[in-house]
Structures are given as C-alpha cells and as structure tokens.
Length: 369
Image (cartoon, rainbow, N blue to C red):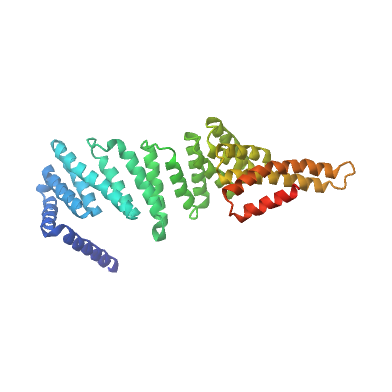
C-alpha cells in the first residue's frame, strides 16, 4: 500500500508540474483526449486516436515531458493501424514529434543531463520506425547509437549497472541496424562491457575482448581499438597471449605505414613481450613520423636503454668466464647506449622541465664519458 501511495504521489507531482508548464487549457485538452480513448465507441475510431496523439505531441513540444511523447507515439501508431487513410496526418504529427525529440536530446546533452538526453534519442529512433516518410530516416541508426553512447556516459551511481545494460543493448542494436562510423561504436561497446565486468567478470571480459576483435577486424587501422586490445591483454591476465596480437598489429602497420600511432602500438606490444629490437624499430619509426612527440623520442631512448641494460645483466652473469673480454663487451654495449642519446636529448628539448628526463639524460651522458 505504501508503494502504491508513493507512485500516486509521483504521478500527481508530474501532473502538477505539467499543468504549470503547459497551462490549464492544454491540460483540459489532454483530459478530454484521454476520456475519448476510454469511450467504448469512440475508441474504435482512428480519428479518436489521431486526436489523442495530436494533443500529446503539442503537450510534448510545450513541456518536453517524455511520457507525453510516449503517449503520442502510441496513439498515432494505433490510429494508423485502425485507419490507414490517416497516414498523411499521422506522419505529419510524428515528424513534429521526432524533430522535437532530437532537438531536446541535443539540448539535454549540452546541459549534462545524459540519461534524459539518451531517452529522447531512443524515443526518436523508436518513433522513426513507425513511419518511412521522415527526413531523418537515413540517420536512424546514428540516432540510436547516440542514445547508447549517452546511456554509457550516464552510467554511474545506483543505476550504473542498469544503464550499462541499456547502453550495451542499444549500441548492439545500432550496429545490427547498419550503423557505421570510424570504429568508435566498438570502443563505446567495449567500455560498456569492461565497466560491467564486476557483476560477471568472465562473461563481460569475454564480451569486451570479442568486441575489440570485431572492431579491429572491421577497422584494422584504428589505433585506439588496437591500443585497447593490447591494454586488455596486458592488464587482464589469462584473457590471451600478447604475442597472439602481433599478427594483428603487423597487419595494421602494413596497411597504414605512415600512421605514427600504429607504430606506437607496435612498439608497446613488442616491448611488453620483451622483444626490444622490434620495440626499438617501431618506436624509432614512431619518432621519425612524429619528430616533435616527446613520448616517441623518450620511448625510443628507453627501449634502447632497456635493451642495453639487459645485455649488461647477461654479461655480469658471465663475468667469471675466462674467455670473455669484459671491457671489450662493455664497449660494444656502450655503443648501444649511445644510440639512445639523440632521442633522449630530443625528448629533453621537447620537455626541458621534466626531472625524470633530465636525470636519465645526465645518467646516459655519464655512462658514455
């Protein structure tokens, strides 16, 4: 009983706000239209439902109450199902409703009301499916994708899991409806699943993984998708071997050899599997394509230094071997350290106030004296 009273109180509150926003005259029109569709004879006529839809469209345009939009769409759909001759009038009202829903979604998005904006976009898409005569019909999948993205952005607090599920469903539906972009929708869907992993880790990590693999299959040169895939394999142990991604990353750089970010991805991947020669080759290419990138220059230097450090470690393990000329071997390794110097100097030029870079440069110069 307490729950029923709360619901009634909420309905009364909405009605009161609606009365303030749309005025007594329009509230009277809504009440009259509601009464008409409850009438045994009048409810059998398409015109009754058309009028009901019309006044609720007008109410939505005035007050932007999403429940008015839902009532309008339902009534207009009912009208055309009863009387197909009403199609022209129905389409006219639906067009007004769709346009207003899209505009309201954009306004709410700008105000940071993401959940409400998402609901408007989703409603616009559902309404579009009622008619084929609207100018936004070709944009329908993108409107749905926008709704899914907004639900993802809104997913926080007590409703987090619910909104993530809604975002997942809608983004998947948008893909199935033929939505295509530059691959961003797969990143958004991945973010949904990955954010949802705490409720069912095994299931959602698998969904996240498969989403990225599908994304990179369709968009093999999308560096952000590839970067997320590498990060996923690195962070989530047991999801797969990082070495299994080498063929994917190599294919991407072959397809777009002048894409600096793809070379960065390749360098990070080979660095993770401790293939420092390939990591250095990749990052030096990254630095060649992006000479003003601090990360490219500093990263190249670090990979070279790491390789040289590993060689020193191996040499120190064999220091008692009488057949090794230790000083001669160190001199060879110092030549490798020297290859890092121009990259470290360039990194220091690009970010002269970074203490770590300054310290690394000083240590490298000291070593090469």
